[in-house]
Length: 171
Image (cartoon, rainbow, N blue to C red; front, side, top):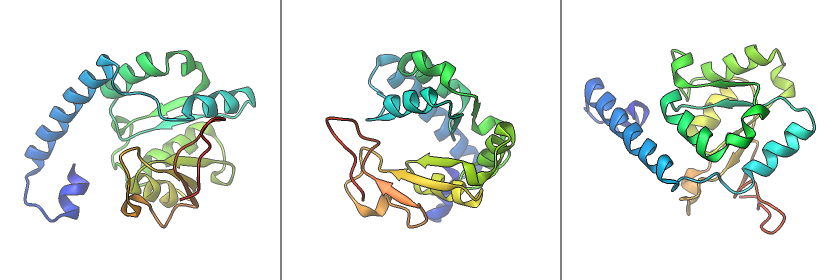
């Protein structure tokens, strides 16, 4: 919210941004609990394939734990053991587009950024990954019908993570 406020040069106060963010979390939790938010195409397949190949996986999100946990419990409950760690906005001082969350995940994984890849669906997420010296695959958000959502900084961009019946396409 603050990043967007700064981007559009709005004079909305920090306090008002916090209120908007809090309200957004409230509505998001209700959407998750209603079952209206689903895992995107190909995500569960990729999680399984990486897990079966013993590839360490982290969730790095700008969401808070109170928003993320209901989603994990409803949509990814059978996949929770596939993740080595979760980094949320509460774990770092500077949020995406700053690299702090990715740098923390790298530290926790004890891996070199050369051996890691980030999968992101937003321009600020790509910026954060690239600022942490990670390669980054961008997947378009499902509401995107425009190239304005594509970051030129991403190493590649695909329409989705795809599946056998609906493969992804390069953007």
